[in-house]
Length: 345
Figure (cartoon, one colour):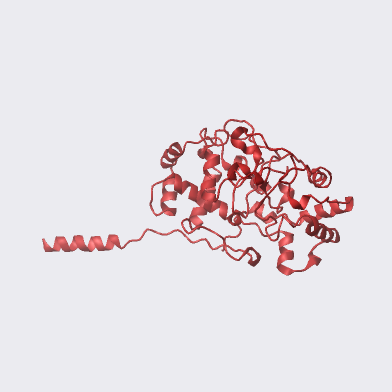
């Protein structure tokens, strides 16, 4: 009897001492001018296995109600995760046009708000909107959990990342967020310039473009992310009274209910800009020439127009050519081949 009790005691000690294998901590390479570290919440620390799970979910149409639409249906890797030249996407479950241009996905960890109006405060909450929107994934979260639980691979993957917790909507969002946080872009020619502080890396036309950019664009598209992460009315409309479709046409006002935010939308990063046409929150400008024309001759005045745009901007044809040449230096070709290149090997 004593031997049996002793054996059970030893077995319990041995089994209780076995720890679940922990996922591998993500150690990204982040340039010093990005702050040197990857911002992340304490409640969702990024791991290599979490990134892999989030990536699998991102590219898997199982996340839609008809099992045909994935996040990658609208966010194309070869275009810095923007859409394929569409003003607004219709690649969702319903086939209907959405109301806003598909934003590219990179350097998301440093953003302070998501969507064009900042309607989500973090990546963890952001994912629920496209998953549940009837014109995007149209996915009931409980039904998604069941699909993932019955899948041949997902239960083991979730168990590894989330300490054997059952699959939940929270952990689904955490996995998505971990992958999206790993999309760090910093290997453009412009980044070489930032690291070496040597303007000889640019052609003469690109150097001139940098000067034009610093004079006319940098007030909102700030170094090093080429965005100020803020919201501005950049004069593309004069009135913002359309309250349809949950007030998506009213800009940041939709979120804050502050009349000072009418017509304001988030400043997009100019990184990878040659890959992310068309431009503006609704994709109304097909080309950079259209954008230049707007800022030089078509600013529409309203009460919330940004102060920086109340003074006329003048761009010569030489300036426009130079700006385009400078924008070429902002393309990160390594990123579109390997968007998680920041993972430390």
